[in-house]
Length: 266
Image 1 (cartoon, rainbow, N blue to C red):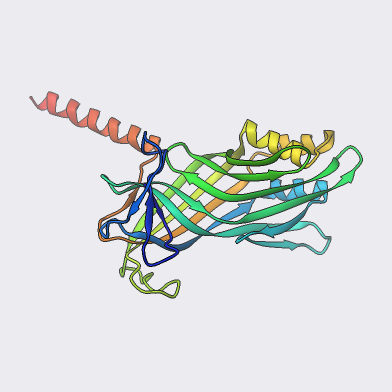
Image 2: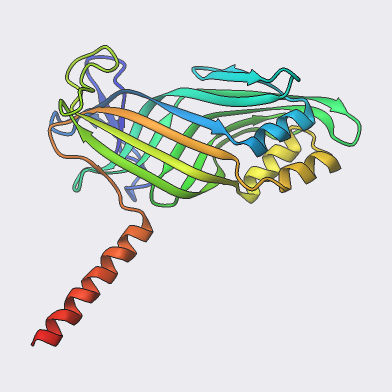
């Protein structure tokens, strides 16, 4: 189930195709399920990614509802680049209240000039990023030059680690954190160790017209950065993020150990 920020008093729920086998439909939101009322998703680029931007002399700008913050050092090289966008929805299992994914709206545009052996020139917009806790994949919509066009739900990065927590209100005072009352939960999640997928690499290379030197820089990147999200929820039921596969493995090992101990005592 996709819980979206309401545009009007009468909110709707879109049944996510990721959770439901049937086609997505809309229905009135039962009051006990709650809503996403706000939050942010922030992509922080790594040092390696900043080096790639400098190598290609890429200009970074905001797109849609996204806000880009970019700072350079005294020599004119990027020292920090981040993009923040408003959180708009989460994918939730209505039976377990487990959150499977978060979604944001807005992004950033990269513009590369034509430079011999580096780039033939191009642009790439990355927007509407989604973080899936189960698959550990960050996907989004891309708008690329050089024949790429607009591609939705594109898997851009795989993730090494996702840490996530649900905080209850008013325990740590986030109820009024974004200016409105009645926030009952806050989902905080951070994905680290971002690595381009094959599809993501193709999008970057083609959209930005990457040539030999730029491709070497891109392929030499060990880590693209991190994606952090804070999503505020109003819900009367307890909500929680889905455990990562590694967590399930640890739980399974723990159960095996308990069974072994019980058999030894028997």
